[in-house]
Length: 171
Image (cartoon, rainbow, N blue to C red; front, top):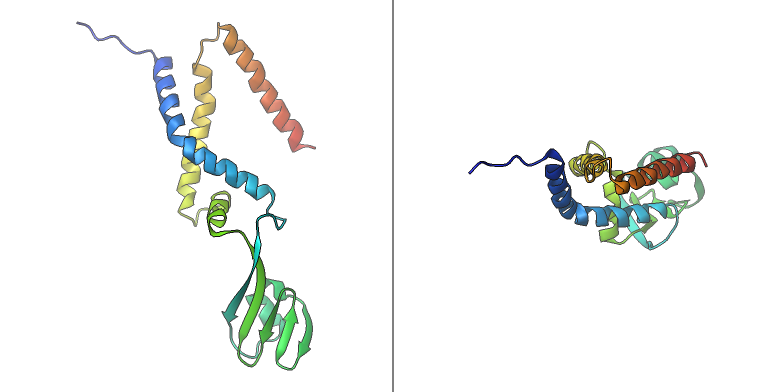
């Protein structure tokens, strides 16, 4: 019995299907964290927490701003206490108290997906995910033969998607 050769387009469809199932969870997390990132400059879902840091005693305004980002401008000083935006610093003890708005723990972790760079282990997940999505784009064109009406209709949708994205980039 001779073994039949499986067409390339059929093999691509199989890979596309199972890779899609595998990536479904990753895509859901990326989608949710992407939506969350839209609101990163607001206080949406954030709660205020006070963080206490032990710094060197006797720091001045200039030295303090290199340690604490929000301490660029010292608003006032009362004795040993320096007041700055969202916090205080005790020059005698070196204790700084800073109020921050933070997302809940799980949402912070999800947000890191979009902020990952080459210094983060998530970098590899981002590369894998990006390459997988690129494969999805290319393999979609092997799902149907170019002679089929559904392929031609799909091409119109693909062109519309590109055009919408380009238009939104310049708006």
